[in-house]
Length: 288
Image (cartoon, rainbow, N blue to C red):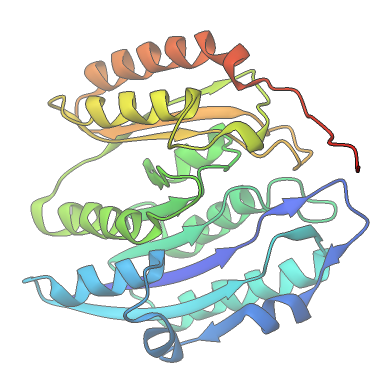
């Protein structure tokens, strides 16, 4: 029996609004601990719904260990007190449920906390300190995530949304759960090739049905057919989160380091070549 923890801590933070996000906003949206998570998210087309469905439907012996789920609607920077409270509950729920064999974690990637510009990186670091280096972690991330180099050192398994508007959260939850099970039951050893580009792109021109982001997502899907490459995530970044990590990036997850590196470099060149295509001009329509 493998015990796999599932958790969710999600917020997209806008640095340039006077609004702040406090604990009340999380409690109004979702703040759940323990078994209530299963009842709340089972049957939903969310990342956590994907975690639950995949692990429940697996032929392997798996115990789902629900930890903490907290989310708030996109708004201003999260207060330090709020983040520390939720992070404390997150770490506490993990400690109370050890030992774990794996961890599935749904994040946004563009959370900003007052005085802490990269809270998701910090939380991953603290989780690693809590569970050790040998327990696999897989995350799901928003297409607008701002990824730091350190996040990839804490786990290579990151699965970004491939749609905007976002309609594939569930599928990425399934992909992350599949990767965890491959690690635990097939001894698969994943690696990641990560490239962050010096581009701060406007999120309003990142739709995946048309335009430059569609081309990048199509290339990513093609690359996933290459032997040794399991998943490719293209991140547009979130320019309204004023952090050092705010930028476009990409992650190639797989088992063949050389091939993954080549794929990442090729995609990065394509992405860089499209940078001007993301620019656009606002048109203000005058009232008659």
